[in-house]
Image (tube, rainbow, N blue to C red; front, side, top):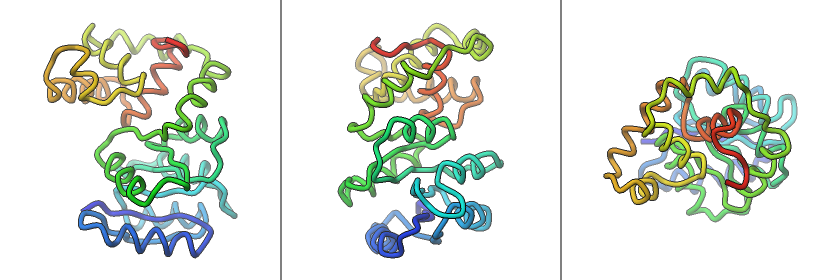
Length: 218
């Protein structure tokens, strides 16, 4: 079972998400929070697999809560949910360590699938905001030489896989491009994350752009 915590300041939204997700055979809603501060406290107490985190909440917003939550040792992943598809939300959410970003106008089925994707350790960025994210990297994401030196720890094939991950390709798509088995790609991705000390694919995407391995438009 995938254990989920829902953080949103609107009670009707929490109720709707809880009702739908609880109906899924592989998902269990273990708690709710009405603001970011409650979300951090609940996550510490319940240790959910995924937190559905709204951006605009009182007391502590979703981005601040994500930073606070993910600064602590935990296997919890954060999926940002918002009605706002502004550039800075996307960029800052991923910089804060979020594993996914989904707009609230996504369908119920897309929401459930997003929870599964993030719980499995993959990145989930809504197609509607992918271009905005790349543009934001072009505007703000200046290469960091110090972080770039960590790329030397990767093999040539691992660097190649990281480059393709940063282009938001799935393991299946990467396998097709490299003419290898999908399981082989999964193994390479795992090694890349371990060597670079990254939480998941979302962080790998941020790392690849910020180190200059991949540049917007490539």
